[in-house]
Image (cartoon, rainbow, N blue to C red; front, side, top):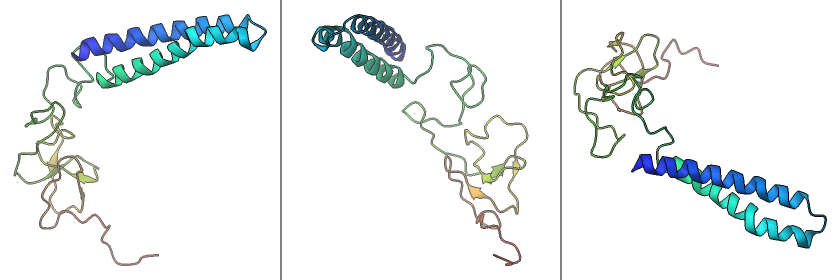
Length: 158
C-alpha cells in the first residue's frame, strides 16, 4: 500500500505542477482580470490542490522511495533489523532488555542494549559510574551512580 500511495503522490505532484504552469502561462497572456479568471479556475487552483494532495500522499507513505535498503533503519544496512523488539506497528520500539545500560564513547545518553540508537554499533560500553541522561527512545532504568546528568562537580556555580 505505501508503494501505491507514494507513486500516486508523485503523479499528483507532477500533474499539479503541470496545471500550475499551464494556468500561469494562460494568465500571463491575458491583460484583463475577467479573462484571467478562467485560467485560475480551470488550471491554477486545481493544480495547487493536486500539489497539496500529492505532498500529503507522499508524506503518508513515509516519504521514502518504495524500495528496501539503506534509509529504512538507523543502521544503514539493508535487511538488518533495527531493534531487538519491534511492536505490532512498524516503527514503534518496545524496550525489552533488563541488562545494564550502555553508552557510546563521548556520548551523553545512557541506552538499553537493544535501543535502536546503539544497536549494531561495535563500540558500545557499559555506563559504569558516568553521569548520563537517560535516552528518550528506550528510557533505561538508571540506578546507582549512572544518571542525573546535572553536571555534578564542586558546586562552583555562576
